[in-house]
Length: 152
Image (cartoon, rainbow, N blue to C red; front, top):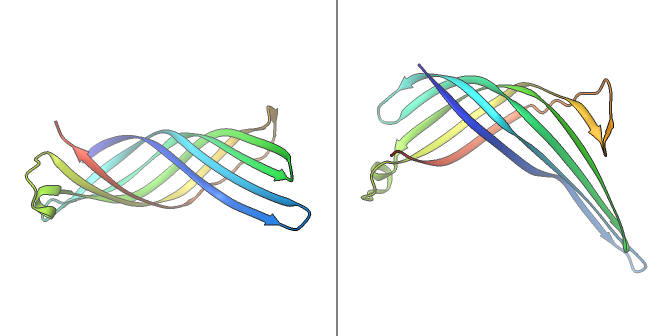
């Protein structure tokens, strides 16, 4: 059993569109970002040949979404912000890098992470500083991660 504390940063382009005609051009880009602290309870399932942990937990996230549109030389931007929490279940596997690649650097480990956000509720939404009441956003889905750990 154990505890893991993380700081999650998720950023992605929701959609991107552009169109060019002889007389005009237009484009729209929507970029969404979620960041915040998270904590998990971990249960060690295996230790050999790799450390495999099952984990469950959640975090408190700050959300922002920016839609930028451009038609010819006119540009506009709309920003939506909010905050809320999410619940996550998943597993991770950790293996020393020297055992994988036969290199001589000790204290390095490779971490693979897979999980699913089973519940989220982002509220307190504001569009350009104006509150949006009675609306929440749910951001559920698969999370995949790959990282390097250095123990010192």
